[in-house]
Image (tube, rainbow, N blue to C red):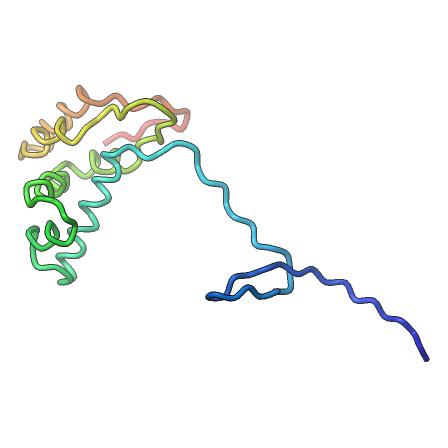
Length: 144
């Protein structure tokens, strides 16, 4: 009764803490990273939303505490937080700007400071349309 039985299985290495273990199954596939980088103003807009959420939830008390924790000046935190004063559709456009494959950013934080302190969103939108011309896409346009 020496019948041989063959069992097929695939294994891959998986790090568990300091140790490497053999795990059954195919290795996990890593998603392909998108090409290019996010514009700096997009990252600042996301940071402003994150900071506001930290304050709202009570994790930090004010801008001064954020500045201390982030090792930046209070003035810089205020500049970033001023992006939350922009019209909601402008904020959305900042968050959805296309990735940059090469070259410099087309928009900088300084160019949006005067725009963000304008209290009238209608005037903000007019100034925004003169400042930034988004790339044309085939998906249609959003009308307000």
